[in-house]
Image (cartoon, rainbow, N blue to C red; front, side, top):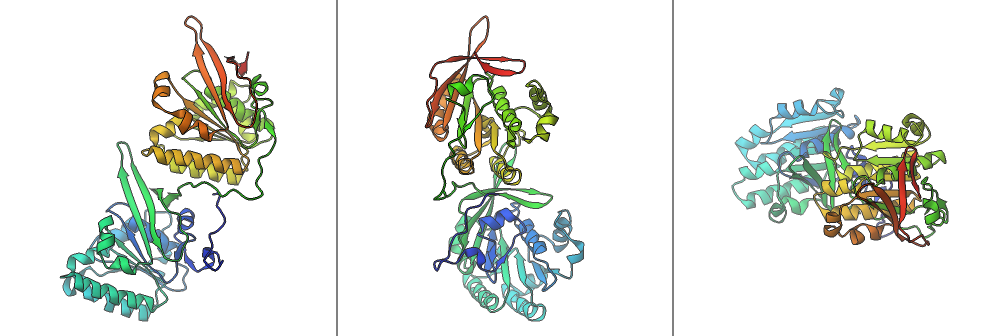
Length: 472
């Protein structure tokens, strides 16, 4: 994905030059500022089922290089056999590393009989004899249930911190902690890093978020970062932030043809390179046709183009492309990339990361998102969606990618959604499509706004026939 330059240490040294422990997920490493600092004590907190164990095991298999063993220690949470059985379902699992490079230990019986004080002596012996590189303790929160007093826990945590700090080992303490526990429990005082995994249940799906509360000595990315649990483990989608504008950045004074006959003349020659155009209109007004013509004009001119679609399934979209005079196969061969997502399973974070990956790997010059109204419906946080779209538009502008966004509206929506302030201000151009007539439907197009350009202010008829749309 597109990344800003690394943040700097106070003396001018980039944070990512310091030794790091990678997580097995490049996006998580990016959020953490390069990964977890080596020789640190880290807490991974979250309610049951949020993905803590999977995250830790993915990290272990990523760092199992055969030089020193890695330890996964269970306490009084899931049985060891369950943990080992479950991890085998993921793609990152490697049976050859099990029992040698990655060693699983169950301290449940020892802790139940001897109490929390048994942990540090056991770890001391393991560190001296095995010299582990990484240690995961799951669940550390469960040890609280065995402590007879907070003083006992404080003493044990202090001894643990002294032990781990004296050796070359990076530690992860997993637990079913809440936000209130951060202020109450002594282990949070010794934590160099604190990571929270959260789950927000919705009617049709769960939203999961990865949040960094603290990473000592690191420039991490704040806020909630969405993730999914897949066969590959955790797939993270970092929160999009507005890019730094390079000092030498200048907009390209170049017009981009739209592919719609008559529209370029209304725009004084086309759209500016790197601009964003919002196409607003009701169902049947021609938004998708106009957007597809813009995309196909790009591939005709040798500009790799990405078409992100939530409305038409792949078969429907291929028929729509064919109706415009080019087969989908030819369009794809000439540089058109189609990205379809069902609006039912839509997650705005994954869409943004997918767009960025395509831009980087395929040198995308044009992007169409049809339609952002589906993102509005899928977003559980309207402000978060707004921030995402604003940051997306800024990234595309800096990389000279010309973009068309479609937005479906009705008269009732226009009165309830302040699209003029929520969407149009972040766009360089706004095209308003309409429907008129009772006996015969007439489509219209009006240019509401163009930035740094003149335009034809009159309402024009937009004719949509076989072969596409054109201004009459």
